[in-house]
Image (cartoon, rainbow, N blue to C red; front, side, top):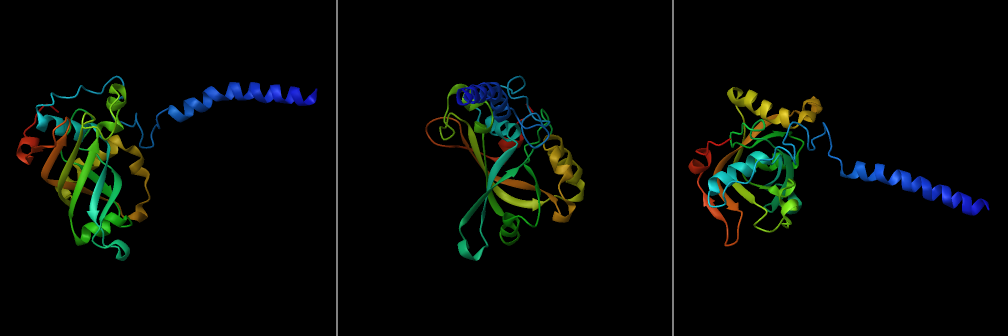
Length: 220
């Protein structure tokens, strides 16, 4: 009898524990760089996608909604010198609803890509609405052009003292954990100086947007 009883107890315990485990797996991270960390409420506050024919507006929208992207640099590591080298970075162009269009980063000399940028500051940054609920809600695969994403090219530079406060506010309000990162890592604020913009939000290839068109968007 002991065997069946123990089996029943284990089954009951598993049934009671399962909902809690599921909740932990699907719940957003709070205060650790996840949703609800000063960014958009995924279901209640995410603004609608701008008209797809307005590529500049779509580009600004994606930059502002996304709070991380993949930055590609040219590697300086001997094993892969000269090869593309991509890494994920947290970013922000401003507080929710007040985006400037400028992607700001919080970087450390300990990061491999920072070493790459010291030798060659040119980089490309990719951001996608796949990180929001937009694509999942509409059933769009992350690689589908309907799941809007953009590619920004330019140079990454350290911000000057005049711009430092803007960069800090932009990043810390959306990534509050950054304030507690170890000072021994010599963190500094940087930005992407955009020279080229590609928007992929529909079939038929990328749309080209100039920096002037991009920064002239005033809806945010």
